[in-house]
Image 1 (cartoon, rainbow, N blue to C red):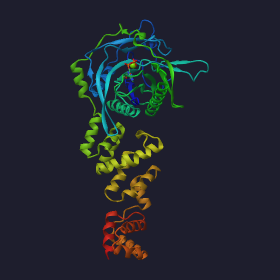
Image 2: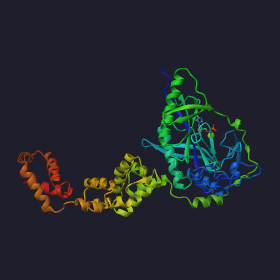
Image 3: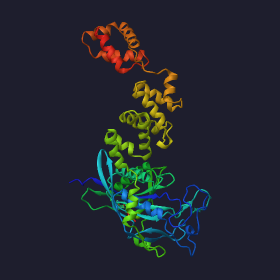
Image 4: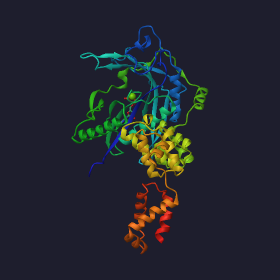
Length: 480
Ligand code: ADP
Ligand code: MG
């Protein structure tokens, strides 16, 4: 009997930097990109005798996140010391949470291939980020930059509920949209504000026990996550099918090769010698605290999607696409408001032409060369029938080339739709005169030739004839 097919099991740990002005346990600034070590105060350096003071904003942000994923917020949570030795960790321990994290038992619904799937969130705990080792700047040496050390993070740990790289990416994108829309994280993956560790294992079918997992660390783009997981799946299956063993190890992804490689065997929790940090009091979150934070919650992507479907009559697919990114949803709503056009038309232009243009140039919505107001100007001219949708595409291209606003381009290129019946009839009559054969065939019942006449007349008017008027007048004229 053939063995059951391999099933993939994935659990993700997301590290999400919180957008506080200052560090989690000190008043040092958290801004990205400063000169190395200019944001490292005595607490960050772990000098003897200093004491950590908890940043209340970080706690509020963690609670906000917990509420957004329907999790349980701990009334009392505790900071713990996690010990390991590494040059970018001056104290020799990281302040994290272990037995009593601030957030537990949440979930996130993702959509893959039109199917909704619920991914469990085991926990999210508050912790401090480590510094950075700089290997390139000093040949033969390693520099240490402690600016990042002490930046607040939440580490969000998923249940091993994810079954493919595509589901993992959907989960991460949704998580990203949530933390950005909450305003707790800037979501900048290149700068490492949002990064993930992917735990991957394979097993022989859904009834087999979990296989041994590997953990690929610090992946900082959606595409890399996809690549790293796919690589790991293929590697593990190959090793196992050759009779080999998967070791529980930490691996590193190399974006240049698309491969992961072993870094070190994984520590067990007891190697970290966790214990409650005696310098910090337990954190108490009251029902009133939670109520106040709830009252301050923005609209979340899932609620937004539901609203886009009902308020704008969009398909679930379009609504999902438009609400996948907060900035994109804002852009779309701006176009609707400014153009006064039907939402469906606006959605078509945003999800179609605009996203295609952005994709092509590798840009995000933040860097769009066509602002919402500009696109609204174009959509409004299509809605009021100044131009047809087809001509709209040319105007769009011209806008991309920086040729001005839709109105300016329409005027400069004389693209106004021809609605004047006289002008259209003149064009029709010329085409009929030029094509007596087709005309005779049409009149003897070859209805299909109608399209030919539409095409010819449209061409003769430079694509500018109003399509409705053209159709109506052509039917009349061709009938004889
Ligand atoms: P660690 O401290 O070792 O990183 P955590 O419990 O914090 O452990 O996180 C483990 C992560 O690995 C979770 O996201 C969990 O869902 C996932 N995981 C656990 N077992 C497996 C497995 N067999 N295959 C894939 N992922 C797993
Ligand atoms: Mg972990």
